[in-house]
Amino acid sequence: MTQPHLSVVVPVFNERDNVTPLINEITAALRGLTSFEIVYVDDCSRDDTLDVLKALKAEVPELRVIKHISQSGQSTAVRNGVKQSRGAWIATLDGDGQNDPADIPKLLAKRDESAADVKLFAGWRVNRKDTGSKRWASKFANAIRSRMLRDATPDTGCGIKLFEREAFLDLPYFNHMHRYLPALMQRAGWKTVSVPVNHRHRASGVSKYNNLNRALVGLRDLRGVAWLIVRSKRTALEEL
Image (cartoon, rainbow, N blue to C red; front, side):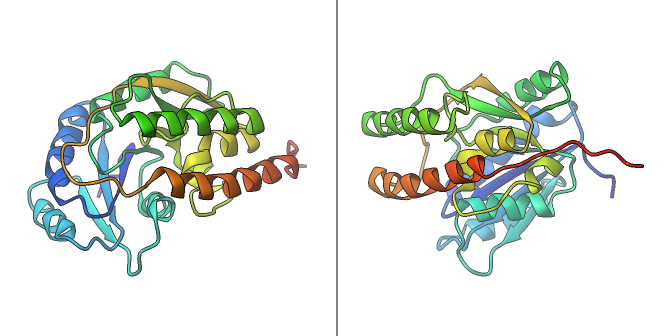
């Protein structure tokens, strides 16, 4: 099997009605543009998401399906998807369909015009289609994170991102790490760029998070990432 240039990683939990339209949009955006694969990671869905994915494998040759044996959360699903991927570059999308696959070519174009030390292109939802309480909570969290981590990233919670696989797998792993990728990439010595992207209403299903849970977990993780940054040490290498 030919190694693809790009792997699109999509973590899912109970998203059976969003699977087919999102995969159709991914293939429409990327076929003829670049070689790619689609890696879905099912985090022990309780509906028939996995059955829908299995059926689609016969119709979509680019589709691969990975399943967790035990429920492990979004960050673990993303990381396992990246580890199983064969592309040198990874694009991630949330499985709820709110990210627009048509933005992936925009991220690829931005990468092609950027310096080689830019390893992450993060989506920036300039016109979010979430509830008012969710937008307010996100704005508040982004303000605190930006003040503590100085990552110069207006929106770290956006699910659509493009990054180099090797650089990602070199980052420290912990639950919820997907929300801190810009700061972690910068800690590793790489540059990051935010790119305005489209954001859509959820067409079906329900959100898997609430504002209180995000806030409580986020504060603990924020302190941990700040500690990682302070304790980081890097040096250039020279082979003799």
